[in-house]
Image: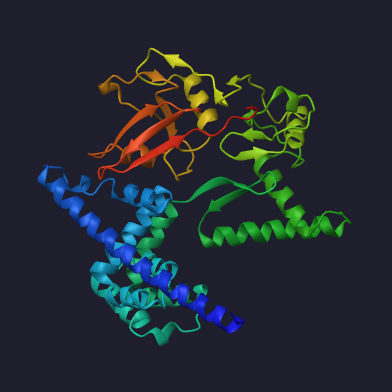
Length: 390
């Protein structure tokens, strides 16, 4: 096959992907409508109708529940309010990502305003021909701000109320600290860091400008003089061999992922971590279980679940653990134990309470439980392999 044909095939595959994304979106909207009718017939309150649909879609797409809910919102918007966008996807010239941008950036508008932007941006595929994703997003925002300036102000006020700081793992035993703040504050923070880094660099400091900014960021937040002397508690799971200097598998920073054993030893040596003894079954790699007679999980059992599960146990989720849930509910005789417990995020914990979802522990080499959805599909959640397993 010549190279030109390979490029033609690549272009064709992309159009097919976009058309299939449109078909998925339509199916998602149809499923939501069907479930809502069934829930209404059961007498469920209107605000509860449709609960669990996003999770089912996420499991089918092998994505997180958050992504499943985004896809569901996309499908409902395309089917009911954005026919031009849906048609461009069916033609294969508009990606699912760009359609999601359009839906997201017009979510606060009226149906009429949304329909107008749908026509302006996607009424003709030639309109966005050659646009980058960034330009596409900017054009959608420009139309939205022009049509509904008052709604934009209200949306900004709501966004300000949702400011927060988050931490997520990065490659090479690093992490991202992200602060969502109003734009003027973000620009001010960056300007202050740059000013301080310029002053330090002028003294002949050998660190790069970026390194100085990062160290200064930590110093300002912690009040300490060095970014390398921050006293924090990091829950590390590592073998005794790794702790004492042997070359073996990485340690595990709970909730953040694997850490090279040499770096983990350095953290322990400099006081950046507490040591807690945990035991595993060598053949299976499963942490030894704990049990309680209480209805709610006690603190030590919660810590055990946090360390064993690492992140939300719902398949494909991966969000931070916020709740400690009985797999088989207490009302059905489920025990408060490590076998019948799982660490989950808040959204998954509430979603699986929807009618038709069931769960139960199952036998396996490592801790596992089965999740069944209202449509009868079965998914198995298996705990991660513990550090130090044979």
